[in-house]
Image (cartoon, rainbow, N blue to C red; front, side, top):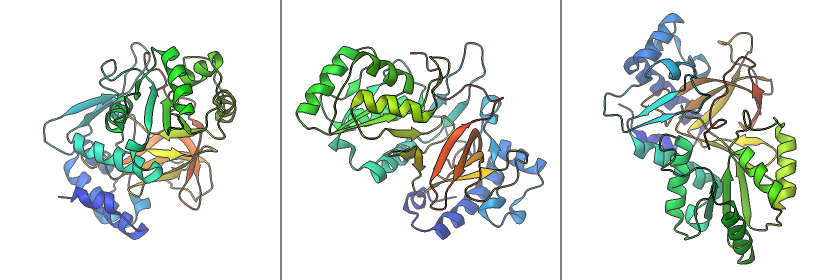
Length: 326
């Protein structure tokens, strides 16, 4: 059994690779769906000596199978959003404390103590979307921030406007987090000149309004909020960890997460850094499910491990937070 404490104490690339190989062996032995997938590829632990040799499970499996290693009781099933009648992804989580450790430590690594921030969410409340992993995370942020102004404001945008102006006047540190279309709608009604506020978008335009490239979206948000950069969060229902961008749409991962790209024409070939391809994610915190996921996103990875999301494969479903019914 893997010691989960070691996941969040990775210091070097060698430690990451060693633990990734151990987790691959553990999931090969204990995850029936992943084992079957590896068998089809004739990829067994004896054939896997490097991280690049590890098979990445296509993310679509979360729509049709229970992707689980653990036989423990399922504490929460997170579900992706989708159009009416569409098949959505389901991520069964047997250890919510592990999820909390991952998103808490990940945020702290990039932004510091959540208690230093007033957290304003342009998102539906936890009670409205109890099965959203994003809402679960943000609800925890709001609770731990311990500021009376922190909360969900999607249905109270006038109050959100007043809070932003008042907090800006008090020079309090603020994290405003929301889906892209809601943030864009907000600044089309109100204009700001914020000094101590981090504006963070979590994606989500399709099906809501005209699609914008991220650069254009960020330009509109920067102008509307009066900030120099727009931050971004990159996460998925099927994962337990997040990557963050502090501007320019370049994402960085915590030490227990890594992004690779695969050849768009040959899904089993991992590419050199700098080339555009399908995004594969290693999330070692996702130990009780599958830590090696092949996504439907397109991107490129740079020499320092940071990455950029360029788009999606044309035939992929609209998923994630894009069509959250709000």
